[in-house]
Image 1 (cartoon, rainbow, N blue to C red):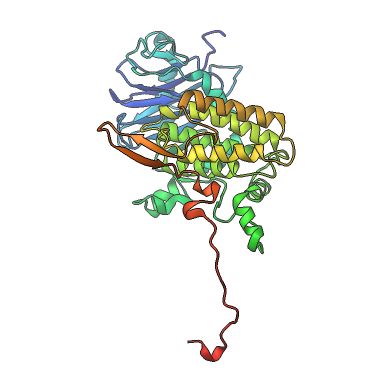
Image 2: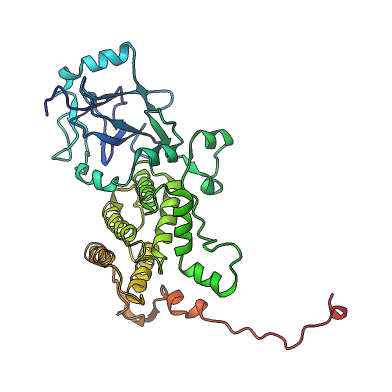
Length: 402
């Protein structure tokens, strides 16, 4: 590609030692840094903060579109009072910035793909993660991004912050005013894990629907997806993860968990929607690879902190193994790849062949008896054991009631 036509994203006037990033590339800004060159076409996420610590982070989705007449350029300028990058689309500042690109090509613009952890422009801790970006965002689309951010069809800057919130999570985030919520509301698909059955369902059918959320999955797809394959759910799953990764957004974390738990608690529709489940498992594996990139970690992947992940994956594994029909090979292959990854990389034991009760020798020579209770729910033991309730043979008449 001719350098005169290569796409450029300018991030101008960033504060010295401020925090910034594009997609999976994060950095600390320096006086020479002006932006990125040779950026691939398509959607990208830009994000900044006054510092790399726990400051409010602002981000925006921008789209680089192929142009035959001129170089695709996006110009962003630091707004000191708001501590964010504002989009500049026209005017003297825009024209001057574009005219200076050739002079900045080697001295102020960092290549999008880096080969080391520091660039020639002093932007330290620049991560070599650009190759994973297409796969981490493969199910995102113009429609999904605009719906979630509430952007209009002609908006070119789809903005949100680390405080942006979905209505279902509003009560869990203290201090958000009505105005702040309305200005930064996220529009995810509503997924209510506490009611995963249809209207009028009672008794045993309700219990089964709570254990197998296939009805909920189909309901979400029918009501909120434009395609009946449900791949928009994966788009939201990817969006939520990227916002956790870049903005530390709490509401996106909660939505990521909702999708994760819904997908891995489905049973009867695994074969019917084998493409969706196979792609979900592939996406989950790649996301787990990047969990360590999140500040404080997306999850503590130790035995205790990773309980939500491990137990849900184990539950899905049991559903596949106990299925009455042969599970589609795409799902089986993707599941095996995921299990191999968490076993070799995280060190999880992904089968039931381990001691649940035994003795542990402490450093001071004392021996104590230990018992693992993580899987009591699956085994219907402990507090999850069945309870027999004896009902009275006769019902008291009204005259004896108080």
